[in-house]
Length: 108
Image 1 (cartoon, rainbow, N blue to C red):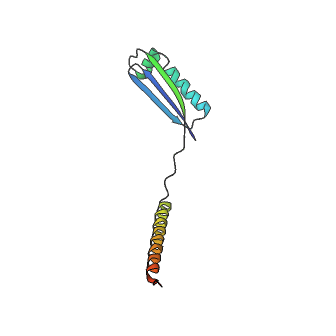
Image 2 (cartoon, rainbow, N blue to C red):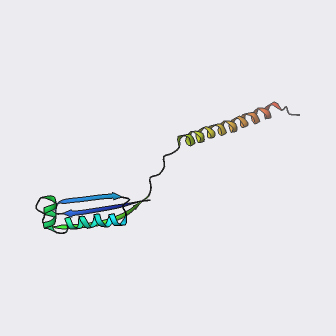
Image 3 (spheres, rainbow, N blue to C red):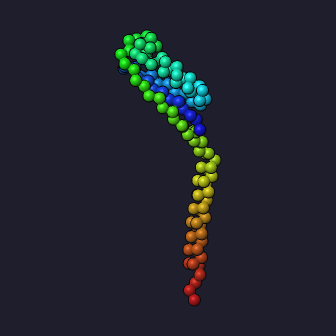
């Protein structure tokens, strides 16, 4: 499973979102610390963005993402469809054979 480090920081009307995948615990902590320092106060955020920031708030979330699902095998789908059609034809053929057989027997 991939561990996704997702951080959203709101600085006034500016929203900063950072995403990193498969970081070690040390790298994740270092990234969070550097973002915390850069956006720790309105003055630090003002320096970081080179604009005037009045207030800062943020939220850090770590998400465990499931691995992507494997694509459907086209060969398996085609085999299933063809097998189903062959089975249906066999059933229809058996029904027709039984109906002809019952008609060909003369009553005694």
